[in-house]
Length: 238
Image 1 (cartoon, helix red, strand yellow):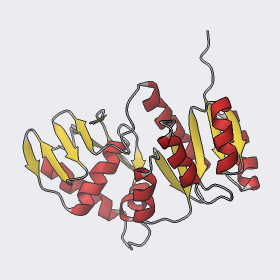
Image 2 (tube, rainbow, N blue to C red; image 1 turned 90 degrees about the vertical axis):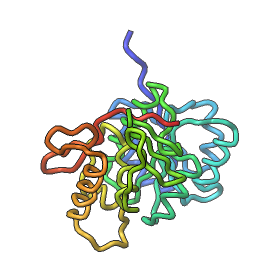
Image 3 (tube, one colour; image 1 turned 45 degrees about the horizontal axis):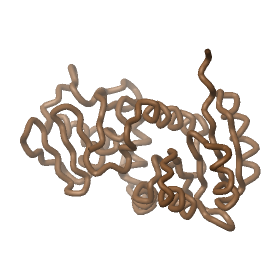
Image 4 (cartoon, rainbow, N blue to C red; image 1 turned 180 degrees about the horizontal axis):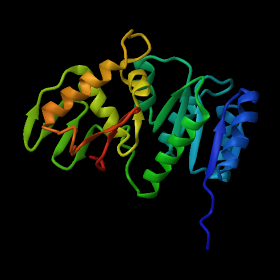
């Protein structure tokens, strides 16, 4: 018996976006339901029973954050990707603290959205807790505490600069996914920092040195030639 296609609920008040995005997701093999605001979506969730929700933040009647809060308060932990329009570090922090599994800034590349949907659904199928909201991440002998902003490796504390720590967090949250330098620069440094992608390479080198990770035969961070980096090992939320 062939597996049933996953169901997505796309919630956005922009009719043009829905008209473009929903058919693309259907062509990718998903069942797609849609809603124009959070209030409509809240009514549809029990009947649609989506495997993942793509949720705009700014909407009439009930915005995306209010819908997300209500779902989590009702102990509904369906994966949610928030679509945001403000590209700031605070926006990212708020999105994750409120229970989102991932976020994308508008305008976005539909293929990047598709890749993130696939990654989240793979994690959900393995019954892995949402590592985007976990305070502690572990991968073998590497342990990271986001709240204390501390890293230990083989039982010893590791010193990292603020930016290197944030970069390691992001890579571990998206483990086994190849992530381009431009995306790392955008997500970790943010749009307000006028730096080049060379800054990513410098912090990767710092992380590797701190962990004793050989770039030629890496244990943790692999270079994806001409593109970016991948955290190679599985990561567990604790």
